[in-house]
Length: 123
Image 1 (cartoon, rainbow, N blue to C red):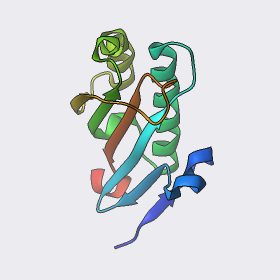
Image 2: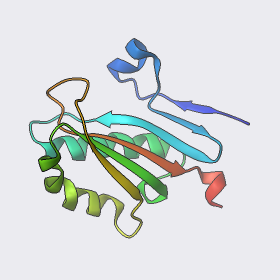
Image 3: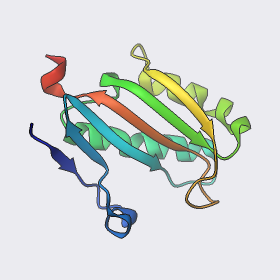
Image 4: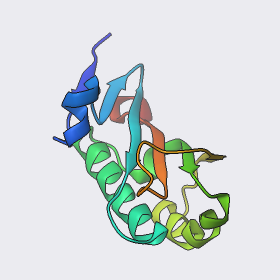
């Protein structure tokens, strides 16, 4: 089995020892991703952009996403993200879970992790 590792150059990849995404077993596994911004909406959009970039490097897109997990320090912030998420996944909504927990830094309001079908698996 071939494994492809996709790096985004983020500061934590080298520090912690991970990569943005791994293509293996017919899937693209995208690491939990936070985004910059002052609001949960800004951070949600930014995280989705980073995820979309990683999926593109793997030859996939948000439309290929089959599973998503949202991590938020305050579950009350999640509703503000719903329109952004619905727009991002459009007619291809993945199975989803939302977990309330602390994130790596208190400035982050949402972290998003996805699993998508790899291109060879979706053919």
